Image (cartoon, rainbow, N blue to C red):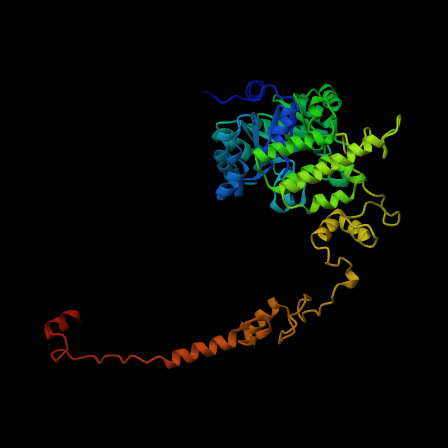
Length: 475
């Protein structure tokens, strides 16, 4: 049977999917996909998988795809990050029998993607992307799709999308933000960019960005003309988003935990989902936030979730008639609802603009309020001080400035000490470097070995010598 392409692929293989759950690292695992499908999702993506690791590590393949085979979990698209055509295709060939399409991640804006040179940091390398898509289109038995971010310029974004289509991309997901729009700088996604792409290509397009409720989904389809809408953060805070419902948090939390018991996944995934689902309630009952962070078992997480449910039911019982939600929320904290990411803090007028993340962290460190990462570290190591003024001061290496070894004979760090000890054939017991001792032992051992006497050359014709005829022949 020939491989379906474009709109035929979308309508037949994907069932004309309009409600799509995004690929989310460590968050769109099988259990969460099944929960989302029960509540209106028509298509799901796997978490982003690293193509190179997928090829070389059988356990990685098993944990992330091969053990997750489930008849209910279709249609399914597997997403890879890669920057080499051969590697991308090799990984895709290993995955194609377990999914309905292979997606190339060209949208990840995180620092890890920058270091690994993949995701949105490939969007200027059009020749490379053409080769990757073209080779995958030729070699795979399933279609290849792409998820991209936009350029600031609409016309460049359109040319980018057309290039991918021409190379063989059969479905395009457009996140309406640039790669610089992330975290507190996310801002609003541009549906204008998405609309322009949809008009310019002849393949199905999914929109991503600004989706918090079903009304947003319907408005996005109407405004942009796309075939489907993908949700990430909106889905994490309300998996019933595509149903148009906002149920009590504990209803979905309990259902998700039941699915996890049938389809286990790492505890870190489960904990992260519960933090998202209970986000607004944990702002009210903050002591349970620490409990949720500390528990080490699935049943422990379930117990904290049950306690949160009881606290919410107590809050409901105390609720006064006509009382409105606090904190500017559309619903009371125990109801699944959108989370609006706070914007960046106002920069100093003197500095004339936004400050770096490092500057904000340093500012936070100077107050009594710790950043989320520092709070997590403090929970893991409650006795460890985070105050720089209380940390011990280390003497510096004479050469590089790193902390030196306390017992180093050269007053150096280990790296510099190793170089010097090797060069001078010296010992440094403080760093466990014994170049001089090992050399002396080696010489002593060689001196103690008996020398073998070389046999004297016998003349031809003498006892032990060659016959004269043979000797002359050898000569």
